[in-house]
Image (cartoon, rainbow, N blue to C red; front, top):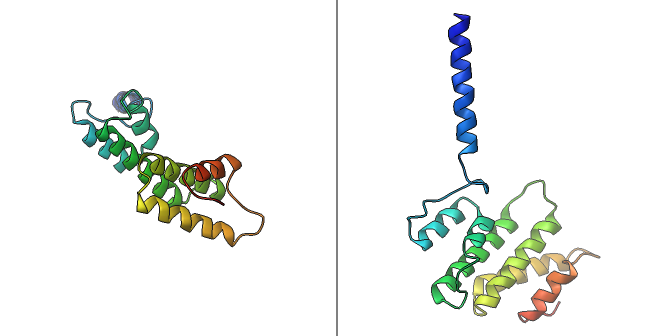
Length: 148
């Protein structure tokens, strides 16, 4: 009885270890045989924005399809940063959101969602005395036409 229990526990432990180690280093992997846009969609659905951005690192940013994918990733990353409440401080999350929305506007200056979200975040900052985004975030905003 003990021998069977020990054997079962050992097999279970090995199975769990193999499953834990078989994922990608980034924590989530997608089927590389899928079209690039589907891979990006799956990564976005799983909040794997950094993985999605890394996947597009070597791609031609002047290609309209790649630019659209990057815009989509940055926009969703910004929205996720705004709306996710975790142990990260609010200022850190909002700085990241503003940075992502700035990247969206560098790709597509006409993206209304990114503009609205920047305005919303900055309106909230305006209600908090002695608080503003990091200087590099403010500089990025200036570069895309916001003067705060």
